[in-house]
Length: 251
Image 1 (cartoon, rainbow, N blue to C red):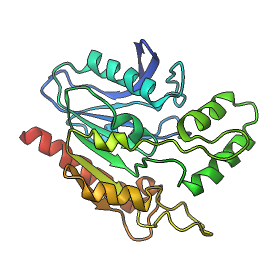
Image 2 (image 1 turned 90 degrees about the vertical axis):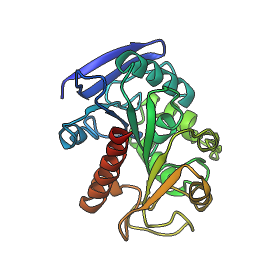
Image 3 (image 1 turned 180 degrees about the vertical axis):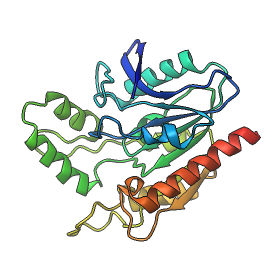
């Protein structure tokens, strides 16, 4: 897909998507997680032709770059990009996995609703990802960026114990309605599994369920962290996104 490069004070964002000229037309801004395929989430452009859709790779993926992998820096970069593209347009943000750490921290006043797929707010409990990340790093011995990202975002060093990265303040500062889609397979306890379970811990699920601005949507039976790429999970995601966009139109 053709890409638009937006230069921010924190680095370049390589965006894909489709923009409507009418600023009153809502926009969907989507950011995927870490180590995703280059065109991840680009199917949303054709799925929602009646609104503007902008796909923003997490910096380090799909060309986008920032000076560091610090989540606050990445968030500030996207806030600047949204300010340059959407001055009067009502926005719905959609974060997937690690992308939720960015979308939930955005401060753009145009954001009126948010959707999050499989968010997590602490990294120490993510035992399946610790294994996956170390396997990925071992397969990419010259990929320094991957090592820096694993350490800065998740607290996974090249050697030694995982250091917990705590993002719970994102939920505490939430100011807009948030729809959360969660996989069915629980994270706890540590066990042998063929498929990746949900990465939303018991603690995070309880915090989401108790939050007055949050609506939780359970994924299909047996679904895990990757439910967005399964047929039933993708159908649920599109239904929740459509619901959010329709709510913005009505407002």
